[in-house]
Image (cartoon, rainbow, N blue to C red):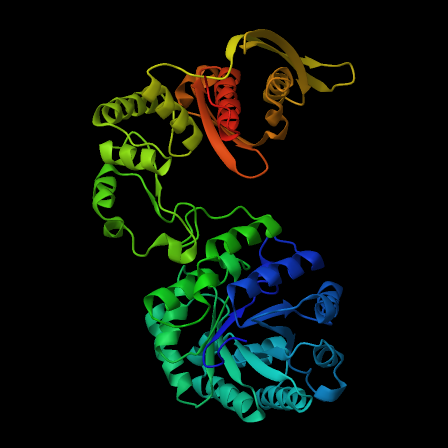
Length: 525
């Protein structure tokens, strides 16, 4: 298990799951828990058993089907109700019977919340904390306490907020996490309050929301002020603006502050873990996320590229490999020779000065017409190969293509595409039907070429984006299409630009198929 001197506590499965649009099944929660355990966090908060059937079932399945290597499972719940003994409260019983070695209790630390939300007295609230903590400790469970609305409570009534901490610690709570529940704190004022809380001799933790955009900064400030327990969520999930991003917190503390929080090899797997969790949650990953985003170490400006060519550390704050990420060079109309040289090297090509000069000129010319290569690496590689060979090289030539969209009597829209191609000395005519013109073209191309190139059966169009580039021309506007394709092992993006959306789509589709064949080892003879 993780070192107990400093806690990394994940609350994705409970607090993170409160994010709008994020819904996890029990199976999803088990999968995410395994990923988090692989990162090496110390504690995983599984949910609130007894409060909803899904979380109760999660803890039931976790007892036999979740073999954690690093983390301990924590059950979340509230202190007993006013006027009821902890031993007799059914929600406390659910925590006791969850099988979790750790229980995290939420308790009010803001006097107004006690009186207006709980509708009880300040003294009864302290009794609720004391009774529930001591009861669960007597039952053999370790107890943490989340002091809800602590910072607002401290501002309103500092003496009472600190008395909540002392009461919980004296009753046996190992950690009291100070919660910025409304997410309104700023680092300097938060650090001052954490420093005062540490003087109570209670072990202090921190739980921050990101409503001011300061959740990670507040967490780091709290640690500097004496907190030894940090809470957060994978990818910054959480209600409203989210919680402190646990990946950013861990990377900052370990790589910048020298904390030994997770195994080095686990930290080097952080990017993969972050993206694996987005697949389970079905939440689009933030490409600009610190450390783990696909753009976190992406460089576009020519000035940056020139410096990186000399020493990558000149424009990177860490080695991307430390968190399992990669440096990427983006090719655009801002690119200079260094950008193109480095991008070519990244793709496995050593470019001569003349080739680099020609390629830079072609990129800038095409981008002035609406193309973009920073989001379409596959199109750039095809352009690079064409430049190296001095001419357009493809696995097939296009004689013509045609698309018909028909509305049936029943009101259904059906698209039919016919393509005429030449490949390996053969003339191929193929027709495909789809739910849209691009889908029909995609099916027609693959149907026509699959006999010659069976590997195309694995090719799949997984994303399709359209952008109007010159809106002032109305329906005559220039259109840019980005297509993302997959061969079951990886993905690549291609771009097409034309006044006609279908023509732009065809350009991107033709390149996608060509690149797929190159990936499969089918070079152009």
